[in-house]
Image (cartoon, rainbow, N blue to C red):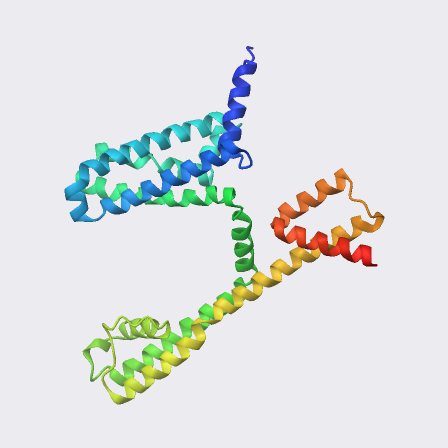
Length: 301
């Protein structure tokens, strides 16, 4: 059985570090270039959806789209080449998104023009690839905190959504009783519930509105209720986010306090702290503030 040449292994490893690492100059440059390409490709796709621009600049946009597609194909091939398990990567979430970045345009070659036009809009999913690049700007930790906060407050949010659903159903039914016989816009309970949704959320499209004095009064009450109610999820999320951050900082503080008992943090302990901070998604600023506080407290004590 023939062995893979060392030169090939080294080249593959260099490609992997450039594409998947985010702490070297070359990898950061690759991330910035990829981010620019993604945003330009998404912008071109949006422009293509505007008929007047498509008529005047359709050929230019199509040429640009083929350039983006070929570049994304080469990037996808480089990712498959550099990872240890290409099959596993190809069926991962980001692997599928990377595939969708260039496959639709090739499929449009064998479809009718109308179908091809709508299928090409799948290319807008390229914007999801931006989340991969967020690692470059250390924002993935913040997004993980937000997801964890949403998970922790899922029960409260579910209760809130159930309350809103009940509120708009009752409000819509009442408005149907008030306006139904005098206002054609409230011809059914589903239409009245639609009015209640856009009223409680303070959107107010203006396509359905009450005309009777009692209906207007009830609509005003619904708007006031909506202003106070719709703001609740923001408070719930903020509270969960703050509590999550507080728990993480407390865990790191306890670990640091234990390690500072001998006034020295050796290399092994520093590595443990680094792994803990990565797991807790703590920023360098948070870590620095915690360590400075406890070191100062240790000296003063």
